[in-house]
Length: 147
Picture 1 (cartoon, rainbow, N blue to C red):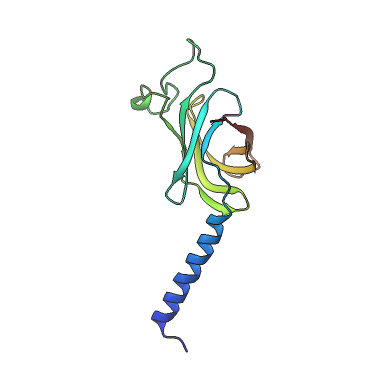
Picture 2: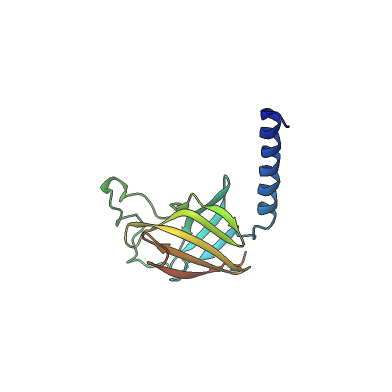
C-alpha cells in the first residue's frame, strides 16, 4: 500500500507528464493572423497555459473606421484605443489543435462571446464565437500573416 503522500507525489508526476505531452503536440499558433472579415490583424501569443489575442491594426485603414472601442457596452471604455486591445483570452489547449474555454470580444458590436479556436493548418484557423452552445454561433476562417 502506498502512503497518502506517495499517492499525491505519483499523481502530480503523472499530471506533469500528461501536461508536457499535450504541450508538445500544440501547433505553432503564435503570430499575426488576419481576421475572417479581413478587417483586423490579431497577434496571438501564449498567456499562462492558454492564449491571448491582441488587435495589432488593420490592413485597410479607413478614415471612417473608429479608432476607439465606441461600441463597448460600458461607456467608460468607449474611448480606449482598438489597437492593442485584448480581443480574446482564457483559452486552454484541449489537444488535437483545439483551444476552448475562452471568450472573444467583437469590437464591431461591443459583444463578448464564448469561443473555440481550431487549428486547420500552418496558415489557417477556424474561430467560432457562440452564445450558450457552439451550435448557436458563427465561424470565421483566419489566415496567418507572413512575417
